[in-house]
Length: 114
Image 1 (spheres, rainbow, N blue to C red):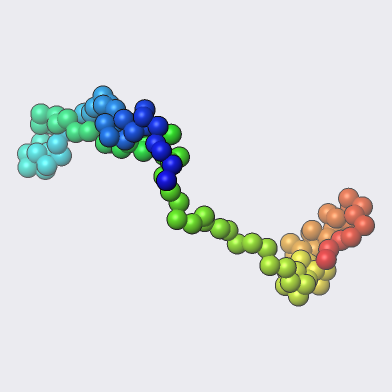
Image 2: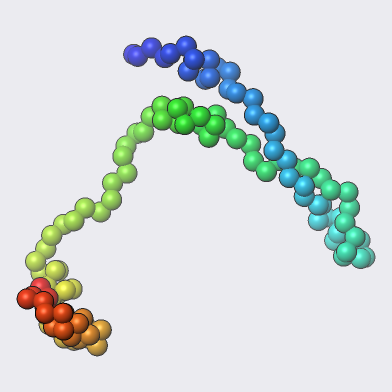
């Protein structure tokens, strides 16, 4: 097991103290109880967020272990699907496909479609 450097160990055992961030938010429960909706009660101070150790230090965030890497959909080639979606006959069927063929002809493409 690798040894953790002393400064990093201190960060893990004693996270840095952050200044608290407070937002001014009026209490809307007192507005509903009063007859006049324009009168606000005494404002309450509520924290916007509570930062964690992982959001404070990118070094600590990089040390988090990943169980698995998230994979995308890899390309699984199929001639049949390719021809059905992007082939000449499928382009000729729709108005948008005909526009694509016309643009490619106007540009002088050697191959109009698959």
